[in-house]
Image (cartoon, each protein chain N blue to C red):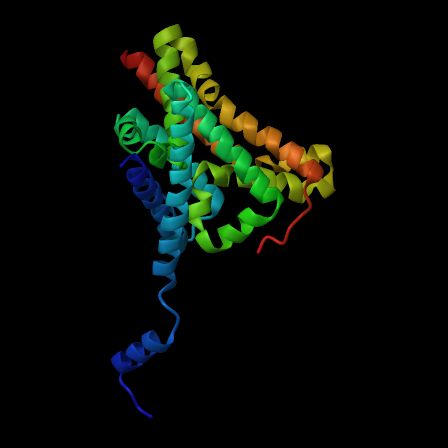
Length: 145
Length: 118
């Protein structure tokens, strides 16, 4: 059977799976937004308990980190991450997941060079370059003050 | 309304990350690092504080917010303590999140078993 390139493209699109890019983005949006929404709900609770804004924000981050650590230990965060991609990576829960999953994964290599070192495999660069950028910004800010 | 914008802005920031993964093939470590540095820059030019005010956790929970926290910490520390704030401000502001992650990591490694990553 002969068919033009356009006809072939149309048929492939019709029988192929839906665009993975669109599906990935939808998952990332739903799950990432959901994690932020959960954070906002927690922050609302802390604020109604009478904590000031700064403390409420800090406690919200700590709660999300602890929740992510729990789900990672149970192996559930990874299951969600397989679907949600950046939706589970970009929130602070993704940072916690990177630390905790490496800590568990590499404990066979020892407490010091396994868990202790490898938990920084993703957290390390994040902290290093984040701090570097903050110091550069701080220097400029101080000079211009 | 707070909850709505937290969801939409947070979700939107994650979609940008997903597009970076799918279209550029950047690794997760590079994305997270890029997000934190971008957060510092966005906070430095004064764009992130209004977003955080508007979207709450939609802006502060993604790692961009971690960068904003570092930059805000440096800014506050310089205003209160002078030049030494350049060195102390960032990690002081981020201490709670980092410490919680590290402590959870070690504690979970005592009880957790390695799972199939897929």
